[in-house]
Image (cartoon, rainbow, N blue to C red):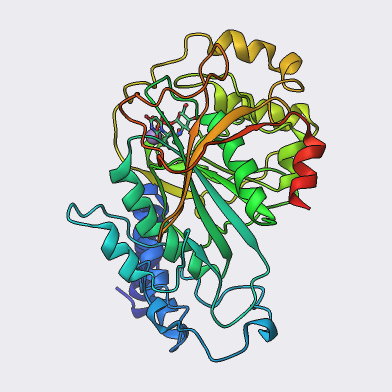
Length: 382
Ligand code: UD2
Ligand code: MN
């Protein structure tokens, strides 16, 4: 056997092995490992900066943020891209967590769940609107993750819990309309995030700011195998500017119980001539805390009939027709709680103070809000 021949044999063998390895690596099951290797290589060039992908705690480095001595009026603008952004973080649900612990972890959050970056002026003012009833456990976990998540993005933000009073059937979309009006009453927010209480973001590159078109943020959820279930899906977490919200007349008020309202909202986006914008599948990732269907939020059997009529109803049902009664407004350390009587399918009746789940302050007189024109909303906010 000549020397040259055996060299050729070697070469062919090596090439063959390389081909097999490449074929294996490109198979889906190996992709994770490939990304892992790339990460190891990248680790070196991250240097000593805060932007270190290997740190995967949502609170990492946040304790370095302290209130500076600078005059609040003369703060420089924050950089376009926050240096605290880190990418994916771990989401787990430790059973012993308390609200007091969440407060301690977030020393710069002030009364009502408000925050602004201590050392720079944010470019963005974002309100988070969360419809809620009887999900205290989920709320605690959401607050634990959402506060540091938003701080990493250097946002000026506020968190509003819109709590439906009483036992009557839940109405998620109407609570969002209430949240919109009540939040805008307090501050000139430039973006509103409408957020299920049980959805925890998993990547801080999913920025909670608005786009040129209404944004659907919860594009990849564990519940749906981290894929979009269908093209028009608009459930979970969405974001609109006040102008976009009013252009589609807000959300519908008449979806009582589970389902349909998210598709109605998606339809309104296109009926009012807008498109849906979305983050990428890698960034718009969420974990949904596992739960059963709540008592008082049974499937809405009318939803398909209602959806078939959305194109005729959206202009008359929404922000221009919403009726409700605020029962209390509490500025708690981690959020603003607004308890509201949204009435029933028959309309808005005075709230029955003997209902067992409702706990408005007996001292305050309820404020009633029965406003009917969009221009009126605009004028209260300007
Ligand atoms: C899906 C959508 C949700 C909505 C709903 C249909 C996802 C991740 N989310 O959620 O956006 O369109 O279907 O209505 O696919 N809630 C309470 N207390 C209650 C009932 C509801 O606080 O008793 C709130 C809470 O914020 C909750 C949200 O309403 O996250 C949606 O209700 P759900 O979580 O029971 O419904 P789900 O997970 O099927
Ligand atoms: Mn849910």
